[in-house]
Length: 111
Image (cartoon, rainbow, N blue to C red; front, side):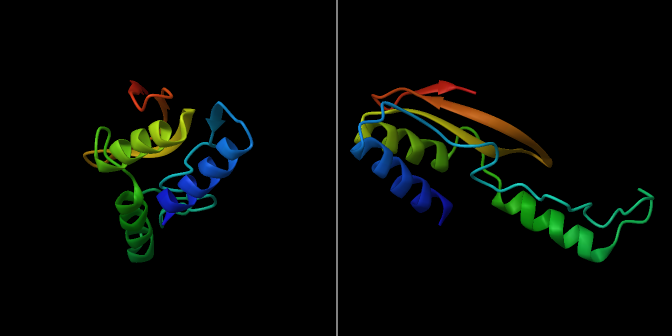
C-alpha cells in the first residue's frame, strides 16, 4: 500500500513539473517511533509484545535490491523524474534506514 501511495504522490509531483522528487526517511517500511520493542529500560527483559512489534517492523522492511526497488525504478522512469526514497532496508536480521537514488530513466543509482 505504501508503494501505491508513493506512486500517487510521485505522479502528482511530476504533473506539477517536478524533476526531482524526494521522500522522507523510512517512508517505505515506516519508522517505529516510540517503540522500544519490549526492552523497556532493561535490555535483558524483552517482552512478547516487543518481539511481535519487531517482527512486524522487520516484515515491513525491504530487500535492496529487490522487487520494491524494481518498482521504484519503474515509477521514476514512468514519470521521468529523479527519485530519492527513504526506506527501511532489511539485510538478514539487521535493519537500516537507507536512502535509494534513481535517475529519470529508471536506473537504480545506489544507496
